Image 1 (tube, one colour):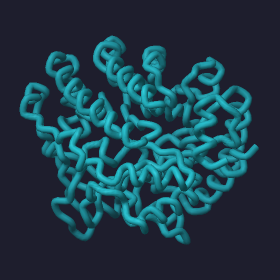
Image 2 (spheres, rainbow, N blue to C red):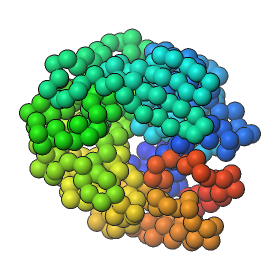
Image 3 (cartoon, rainbow, N blue to C red):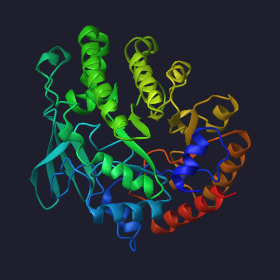
Length: 380
């Protein structure tokens, strides 16, 4: 079976060959290169352009080849279409608001988004922050200007890359802005947005609906061009609790989640929701939306993958790694992975994923152990 055939068999509840290994990426592109020194990785790993702005076009032949190198090295069964979109889970490509370079210096660069928020990306140490949001409060919603999600220029070359990577044996995904997360990623300060859910619910909902309409239009464009799964990064919780009240999730976000899942299923495609945090209080509502995959199921956040498998849900859990896995000694790491694959394997279909990308603190010996161990366990 190819990676694509294996993924499709698992998603369709058919016999499959191995547990897919889907790493969320690396904390930064330099780390990916450091840990894979003998692999010619893509020049454009980051969704934040490093030296040149990303075009609305298919990726180059050289970058296609290097993308396959990256996936082979990291055991990744999927390719996310778009320049800089394949490494960091959920970020990059035409379904997410796009950044261009404003200024490049030796140790940092400044970018500007289509929404006009700016982003400072710094190296040594790696760090980024967003600033100069286009909205000071949700009352500024009428001042927000978004690009045209149906502009064909935005999707130039998308179908060509889809066909190439399908033929190469990969399951095809495309990223989409989160309905809850995009407002505070690209439009308004995070704290201001969260406060506005209580202080100005009318305009907060208007902002969410503005993003929602953009997203659904963009999703149609991605699906009509061959995306087999939409990746939706929509963090709804912290380690301890929710970021949004359950009733507001039901009223404001769930209808959009349902609309996206219905749309994708009409195309014969799938939807993969990423939401960090302890979302148990709204998990029953989330599952009614129709998501096919849900990650990261980190037990540190009280999201237990094996227990979820025992609930016999149609949604496939993705994840399993503990937040502090990389801080443990090798014996504990080994025992944890052995137990995870044994227990999950007894209880249903699942996909392995880490909780937030390979951290910058990891050494090559630990990374090599993880890759080899996952390769071994996935074949059992």
